[in-house]
Length: 75
Image (cartoon, rainbow, N blue to C red):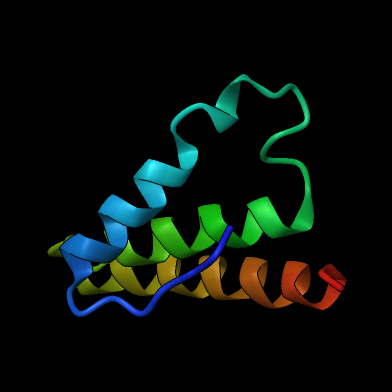
């Protein structure tokens, strides 16, 4: 998947959602490190809409750890 620069959060969410479309049918999709990074990026971006700052921070930290762990596994 070629990743292009996006100008807005909505554009980012739409790009990630477009990538998910059709890929979820693959039984292995979501288990690969690259897919885990995409999922965590989407979760992190969606967390920005949570009003409770403590909960938002927790979700963001978990997503960041997931991104770091799986990005290291992507070659």
